[in-house]
Length: 183
Image 1 (cartoon, rainbow, N blue to C red):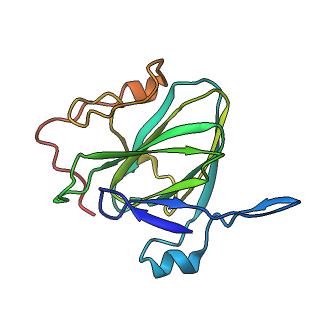
Image 2 (cartoon, rainbow, N blue to C red):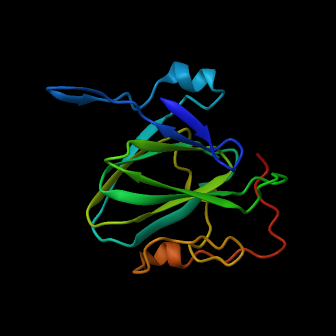
């Protein structure tokens, strides 16, 4: 595994290094020891899988507030997605900035999204499968979202044919007095 810190401190793009032979390939998707050595959260409590049928679908941008703020380890195992992370940490030098990575079954990249970030993705082709691990259990009363088209964040989504759920479309816009999450 090769870790590349993004412009958002604490958020990483990760390249998996497959072992290939005549049978196919083997890739280590997670190693607690390596994450621990990198100083990253390595105690994931749940793994989720999502299948999205239509190109252009946006899921997110979701987060959980403390004390249920969560790290996420996210990968695309079928198709391709634009993965987006938004820094919501109060006092962070990159507060309200976003970073995106294209993740696909072919490039074997993952992202590590630390606590205090909103996270989402847009499918770049039809029929995409993603898996992600989280470090905190889903806690509905601490759930939050940043609307995908919020002008304060101004994410540049790659696909113009957008489909979002009513729940994500109803996320309130951030206001100029939004101070962020105390992590």
